[in-house]
Length: 441
View 1 (cartoon, helix red, strand yellow):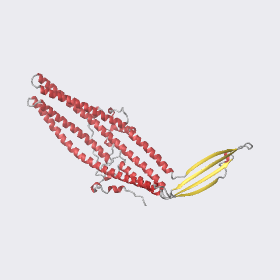
View 2 (cartoon, helix red, strand yellow):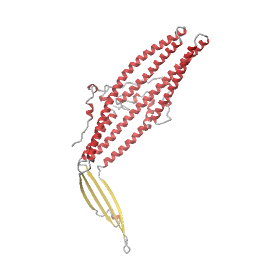
View 3 (tube, helix red, strand yellow):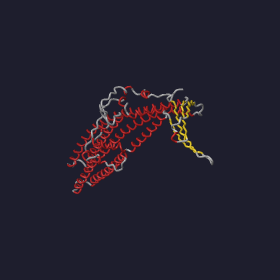
């Protein structure tokens, strides 16, 4: 009867061959900090890592596991107990007397099968796994912060676009109102222009509320309801879209090998295997040495100077009947080891698919951006032509409003695609396991 061990290499068995070849990194000097849209944001990121409630909670979880690791390590060391006591006796005709005693008990389980070693190594691996999970949580938090920043920045760009759209609607209304008073435009034209204006006012109100929602998400990340986006948005930065580089790495196995969440899952497999070994070794006998020293005296100062009496005992303990408890522990440990392996496999597959999806998304968004840029150029030309034709009486105001709406809609789509493409590159960097800060040398 032997424990079943799971190897993370088994999880790679079904990975397509083309995914694990040509995995040399070409952009290993990149890190997540280098992808920050604005270098001034670094101080805010430091604050974010220090104040985020979820991250700080994980740090206390780590402190707890480190304490439990210390407990597991202490089980392999001798246990010493000192018990001093005083006995006072006497009677009606006898003078009272004192008897001082000091007893030292020592107990040490000899780890001849390595059972306690398995327990300690499992605890150490738990700590290492959580440390890696915290590292990945920091990277995810930084990526989330950049996503939120980009969403806010894009929201301001969209608000600026809607303000320009509103200005165009108000200008149309004024022009048509003058023409209507002069008998050159119909009431229908005036109503259409006014409807367009009020629609834009509603859109601006909706966008403003969306911006408030993005800000609340940042307040949640920072754990500060008083956090304001003015801390990292200057007027000049609203109209300048950051250029976030695409992580230049090849596909994808070697790049993924350093992802902290995958390394953490690997550690959990090893910890589960150690606990499985521990459970099997409960079937084996344990050997414990115990020693006792006892010294006594009628004077407290002489207790330690007396020759003590001592006993030494070696004890062999073998469980004969446990009602199936040990077998149940073994079965549970094996099941947990299987869970750890399949969790690793599931996470590994998800990591590959994240990278593949980001690569596909980058290609698609690049095509969309190029098409929308061309579309915007033609839409703006069409808008200009309709405005000129309207001035000559060759087009209706509805034609002009439709052309303006098309132009603004395409521009809004383009802004959205630019934001999606930048966010996708951040997601790609996180999926590939880029570090917070690249190692020097």
